[in-house]
Image (spheres, rainbow, N blue to C red):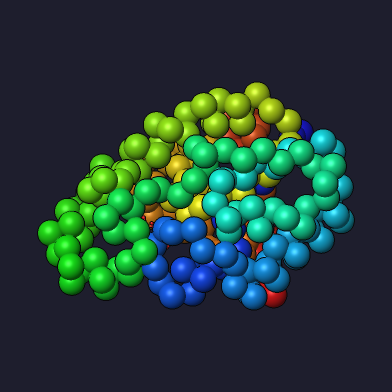
Amino acid sequence: PRSIFLTRHGQSEYNAMGRLGGDSPLTEEGQKYASALGEFFEEEQVPNLRVWCSQKVRAAQTASHLKPEMQTEYWKALDELDAGICEGLTYDDIQQRYPKQADDRATDKYHYRYPSGESYEDVVCRLEPVIMELERQANVLVVSHQAVLRCVLAYFYDRPLSELPFIDIPLHSLVKLTPRAYHCDSTIYAFDL
Ligand code: F6P
């Protein structure tokens, strides 16, 4: 059976500061994850593994230790949810500067759209071609971001949309999905760096 591997990028400078979005590079911890991921796939020897990566620096750096024979494609559709006017802020900043936005988001996280940005619903919509392609492919590793991977996982786990924005996807862990006839088996590898 074929497998779909999903991972967030390694820890970025913005992650370490608690800031949303942006396009910051990996921290030293994040770099360690990138090399651990390279070693994992070196040992695993997954046949014809394709790598689909977002177009953000932190994702490309995370994929950079994978063997060159693994074809890497960079999809804009895999970029993180666009937090619009809140990009680069922390959750505390948002609470202080835009308390109404914070309230609205807490009321309906799935449908809430950041001003000049996106909602989870928007991300689900832009991921449709990616998911269609994932359904057709053999072994794929997706290197993307928290909100995007919540959408992908909700699809394969068949989770209700209201729960989707709360799916737990920690940094430095890799999810292996193996689609079966009516469900998906999953294994989570947590990396000790
Ligand atoms: O903080 C990392 C991050 O990927 C942000 O870029 C993004 O806005 C956020 O997580 C998504 O998580 P939540 O929807 O829970 O705020």
